[in-house]
Structure formats: C-alpha cells, structure tokens
Image (tube, rainbow, N blue to C red; front, top):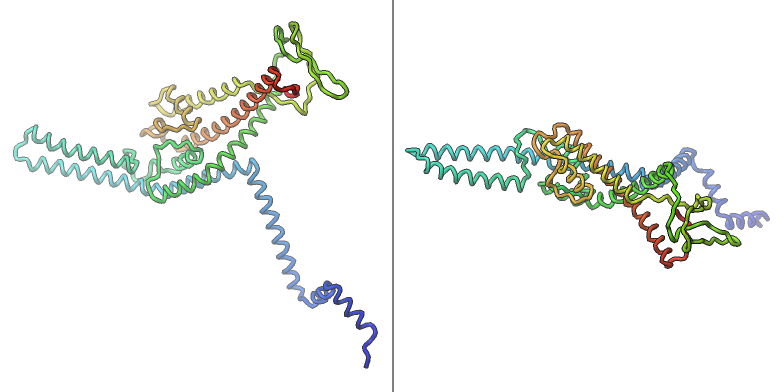
Length: 380
C-alpha cells in the first residue's frame, strides 16, 4: 500500500520548522502549568528591573548619602552592642579593686600595736602607690572614665554613633576606643568598607554644593566698576569669518572695558578664594560658640581649636566634647556634634572644589599673559 501524497510534505515541513512541533507540544500542556511559567518569567523580569533601579539609585548622590547615613546608624548599634557590656564590667572591677585596697589599709592599721605616724604613713604610702598603678593600668587598658554607674556612660548609642562617624571620616579622636576582641575586629571591617564610601559621598556632596553655590553666587548683584591702569585686559571680542580673536590693551591706559555678550554655554562662574576661606572660618567660629556653650570648662580658643582639628581630620583627641563628667547630660548633643562634623566635611569638600576651579582659572590667565597659551579666555 503506497503512502498518501501529502505525508512526505508534512514530514519535511515538520523537520524544517521545529517551532511547529513546540507549538503542538504546548497545546498538550495543562493551562495551570503555562500560567505558572508566565508568572515566573514575569517575576524574574521584575526582579531584574528592580535590581537595576536599585543600583542606579545607590550610585546617585541621594543614594550614597542615604547609604552613608544608614551605615553610620548601623555602626552605632554594632559598637554599642559589642562594647557596652565590657564597659559596665570594667566599672564593677574598679569598685571591687578599691574595696580590696581599703581592706589592706585597715589591716595595716589594725596590725600595728602602737600607731606611729611615720610607720603608718610608710605602710599607707606603699598601698596607695599600688592602688595608683592599678588605676593607671585600668584606665590605659579598659578606658575607665572614673564613674561606677550600673549602665554604660561612654558606649551609649550616641557615643557609639559618634565613634562610628570618626572611624569612617578618618578623624579618630582616640579618647573612645574598642576594648574587646570583636570590637576591634569590627572596627577594621567597618573602616575598610566605610572610609571609601564616605570619601566618595563627601566628594559628590561637595560637587553638588559647589554647583548650587555657583548658581546663587551668579544671581547675587555685584558692582561692575570700570578698570583703569591695567595692562593686558581684554577689550572686546572680534569675529573674522566665524573665527574668534582677542585684542589686548598693551599700549594705552584702558578707561572702559568693552565686553561682548556672555556665552552662557561656556561661562564658568568664578568664586574668589577669600570667599571660600571666609565660609570655612565662619563655620569654625560658629562651632566654637556652640561647643563653648556646651562645655563650661572650654574657652572660645579651645572651642575653635577643637573645630579646626576636627574638620581638618587631624583629630588629636585632647579636646573632645562630652568627655568631662557632667558636661553632657543630653545625648542629643552628641548627635548634633555628629551632624556638625558631617556637614563640615561636606562644606570643606565644596570649598576645595571652588578653590581648585579658581586656581585653575588663575593659572590659565597667567599662561595667556606669559604667552604660553594662545587660546582666548572663553571662560569668565
């Protein structure tokens, strides 16, 4: 019996296009299974889209700022958890040690049959010397602050937050340091990740603040005075067949500067260097007034000294707010100090950006005056 004439044609079509077989196979797939496949594909696409948007947001300025703030908050909780219990234990050990030395002093007094001042003073002097060495060792090794409260006074959340910020900003006061093994290990890991992240964030914030400051500086009305007795000033811009050239006054006194309409596309707003220095000095003096009010033992010079050492990231640690007893009852002041440090570092980054741009323009003008560069000053 011979095959039907249409059968070879259908086999060739089936071999040539595998998609026809897949369609035929899918027709036998249960509806519920097909729905699950489409749903899983949709979930995968949504996850990939969300991951891309999240990475773009994290790289942006707002994302980096939020990431640094969240990283600092997380660091405060971590270091408080690791160090607070050890601080409380050290306080109890100091109190127990003091009681031991009191007992030794009483034993010496009781064992002497006749109390002579010289004998008792010599014995007591030995006991107090041992106690003095023990207290010095305790302060050096455990960072004891002289209090014996039943709760942590240094490694509170505000203190741990301030510590985490000083770590990632490389200030490092040194008056508050981790004493446990896990606290020191966490500091190393925390700094490795946090320092590059913070520097990148401060650079981005400084650049954004510099753009905003240039915008407002451009809007400030300033007096445009006529220049005289200046050599080498630009008189006007000429156009010769679409090419730009510049005329310089080198032979006569210039009474008026004739300027062409500014090219807003190429205009660079220049901020004088002394303005940036005034901003930094004003911020330091404002912080000095604030810390002098908070710290009754500080004078205005010591407050200014602390602000300068802090904002320059030197961080000696000889003056630290809240270190003396009874000088900082409100924990919110430590958070305010943390915000002062972060905003101050961003302000320094902005001023560096503005001064760098101004110095670049000054050297360009100097190069044109010396004839090193022949390009015209298309930037003002």
